Image (tube, rainbow, N blue to C red; front, side, top):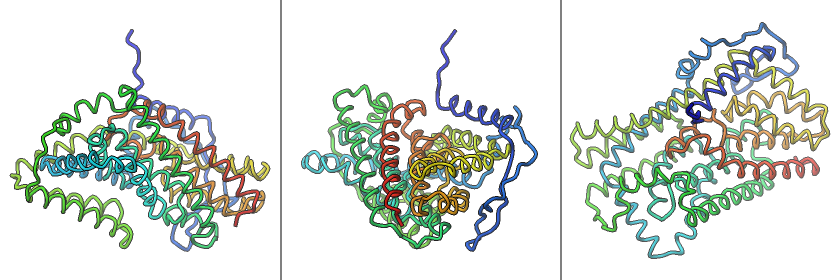
Amino acid sequence: MEKIKFNTTLIIMSIVVLTALCTWFIPAGQYDKVKNQDGRLVLVEGSYHQIKSSPQNVFDVLKAPMDAFKRKQTAEIIAFLLIIGGAFMVIEKTNSITIAIKHISTYFTKYKILKTFFIPLTMIMFSLCGATFGMSEEVLIFVPIFMPLALSLGYDSATGMLIPFLGAGAGFASAFLNPFTLGIAQGIAELPPCSGLTLRIIIWTVSTLIAIGFVVLYTKMVAKHPEKSLTYEFDKTRAKELHLNTKKEEAFKLSHIIVLLAFCASLVLLIAGVLKYGWEITEMGGLFFGLAIVAAICAKMTVTEATTAFYDGVRGMAEICFLLALATSIVVIAENGHILDTCLNYMAGLISHLPSVIASWAAFIMQAVINFFIPSGSGKAVLTMPLLAPLSDLIGITRQTMVLAYQFGDGWTNICIPTSPVTIAVIGLAKISYQKWLKFIWPLIAVWFLMSFGFLAYATLINWQ
């Protein structure tokens, strides 16, 4: 009999089924919720009560992906991926980025010292973006750019994916200004905005250095053993498609320059839109749809050429989009079975009886577990902090430390959980199976966890305010 291949689809589907089974054994329950001053629904402390059980059956499991497609956040990310896939295929057909990458590669080869600092500097840049304005979904724009760029510099596509993804991930989890996670959590905990800044910057520095070291060690391993690359087979065909293995250097045409200028202008607009006007994923999608139209016009593509290229890119995203819906099915099943509040209440009860340092660690682990079902940072802050902030007063943990436990629990597991839409999309773009990704990334997650235990213990012992 043929051996079962544990690919990404099978792994995620197995977790969906396991979650459905849990709804038969874990009692259903919920907290009462009220609107706070910001209009967000928050839990009422001490209001947990059991409700009628809602065990999920086989048909509930089968229709969960359809329910997932209807969820606002999932639908927006799927639509964004389809547009990004189409837009980048149009830009790729203009050959502008490929030629630019060849010229950049030549420049880095000529001045080798630049290549030495390429990974650290770019990862610090992305980490700052994660720490200040919460870069998350935005990395999906940069991954298709950095993968061929990394290939042209002698790395593999996986390195090009790791630079923006792990860079932004490290900054997001150790943020010192991020208004979407840290800002909301501190507000609910009734802490001053940007408080505890000095220690947070130290934590950010250590977290980012760990991420950089991990990527650098990976590139050195691949340099010695190319077959150990996460994208070894993918890179063989990708280099040929992009003509990166040819030494012929093509000249820039006016159309190439205009397309590149339009692309750079889009990135500037993206940053300005997010920081100044509060753009979200819908506005970002509209921006890059417009870029695809501008690129097609500048490259003098016919309507047929442009639409064919765009739909080729859309088709290339189909598998990733379904995996996102399948991963969101885990959350759909857990919520429909009303077991999330029960788990939250049980874990909060356990924390309340632990010594202060151990309790800070337990709060961190609790947030990491909840993050599996609620990968939204702001959503998790609104769900858990109204319960954990007053609990921290009773068990000898400062509210500042409890916010840090929330940040760590929310951030590190985002890099590896199958319910994170960005993770599934990023590894999908790099053609890496979830099983392979989990095996690769767990040492980094383990180091980040150990670092978190150390900082939480320190914060608890100094009564960090």
